[in-house]
Image 1: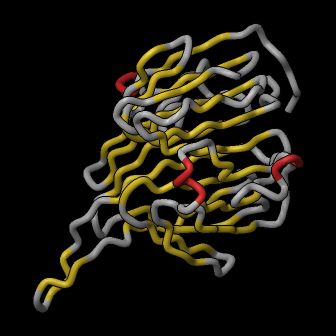
Image 2: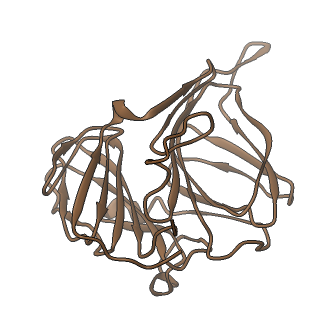
Length: 258
């Protein structure tokens, strides 16, 4: 990775233009190249390589599969997701709980929709889970795999940008969870109508994603649910909402070389 500054640029990516995977139980939309979807001009922004917007049907999910040398952050918007991995970690992820998995030298894990309701004598699965999964490259390969989760729902009540995951030294005492990349931090804001605008961090690379609702970004205008903006060369822009919105912002001070 190399630190770099580029001329200010706002690259708007609309929700309907994302790659799409639908296999019945999974409705997934990919902001970057992923799996069978590949575009050499759309592989990453800064150090962010994956921003998947997933809806998984009740009683379904991703069976055990491997990862290596990647920092994986999962943020649930609705429902709950069960995580289990080969290091013995397990947990239920739900809205307001931050979760990070460091794949490092190699890890196996599964993710399943935790939704079920007891109906008479039978278990009836009926609630989908909606979550955003994001992958960031680590500072170095071959680290020891790890897992962390922490409840931060209370902090989000402020409506401001809340650090959710960070490897940046300045966030050591404020981030909910730590990632192994000292150039990157993920923030979330639950914007409310009528509140003061939020101001984006000043960084060479920003990825702004509207996870829910609708918001307005200075210099761009209205962003609908699923829209994203890739900023290069500096932040400081303001965001507001008339309807309510949940915003995920990646602040990045480096980019992947090449």
